[in-house]
Length: 251
Image 1 (cartoon, helix red, strand yellow):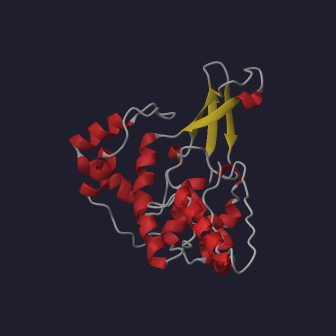
Image 2: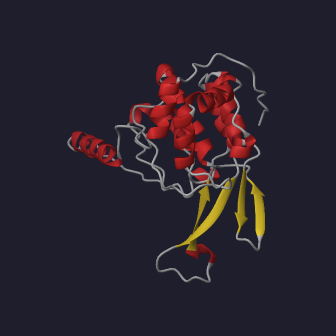
Image 3: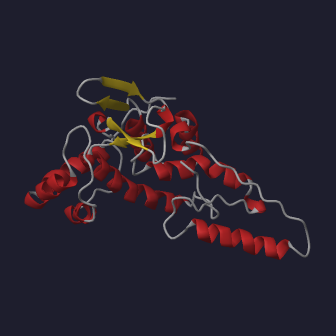
């Protein structure tokens, strides 16, 4: 994958009011990441001096850069109900990311979604992780189409279950897809630095294990569902005339 060096580009900066709307709508009480700082702390900091966090976020966007220190995730393991504790697959790994990084992600997501809408990239039949769309609507569209075809032709429905979809996403393919759609360099660079040198860390006080991520993304990412939609979008474009509908990827 090519290394996209950050370059100062035009990026519509956020106002303190916009940042405040994002911060004030956060669900408090979420577990923090490695820095042990939860949303309540950042909410109080923003309330005391709004210009401080606003300036930091806009500086990241101005240089298309996601701070490396915010990419490291703390891994905890939750036991699945009814599973034998001695088995490895009895646990679900959950990644806890730094909360300030997730605020930065939410702000980026607002601008990125607007950019995708302007380019009209996402296929009409994309229903996964889309605001105002759902699996129920996708199923209703399928049923309607089958009823329309019932009297004139045969129909076949193929259902694919993508196992661990987010974990298996190939970064090089993602960036080739971003390039093919003409995504602005300021967004592409930010996404690049959001992904590279990302680590997951397990530390129970006795053992510390670090692993570098080379594909996919840890659970808990704000922008990754949107990136997944772009990643899978070319398949929908290939089948535009066949009404292929992706309801969602089981992750």
